[in-house]
Length: 161
Image (cartoon, rainbow, N blue to C red; front, side, top):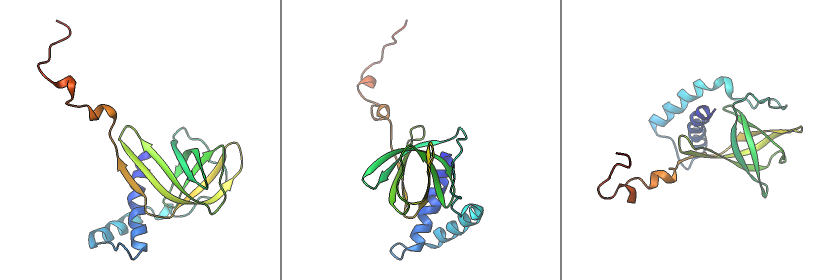
């Protein structure tokens, strides 16, 4: 699921920039957007309201907005929306930020969304339509910051003879 999210972040970024006059796309980006649009044409409708079945492949994330932070599971990712499951819910039309991170690849995503629909249940299910320019940031683990630090100073002696 993280690979599909990573792919779609670029699509959403180009699509949002193309829709605004502030950052027009260059010729190469226009071609990239058209190519991506051809790849996601089957995926551009917000899924119908209903329960999101747990398939065993979900992505933990935080939903930030409306004065609260909810822990959610991203259960489905399409070009139109993210479908999430959680114990709480938000109102339809509320603007939120979805924050998801992948510790293995060291990538964090922030996706501006609007709540498209809410399906009550145990858990509640919501569709979040991406409606802004998402961000993708890289981070490193604390152990990466210490590479070449005091442990690597001076002559290294083997611990076992």
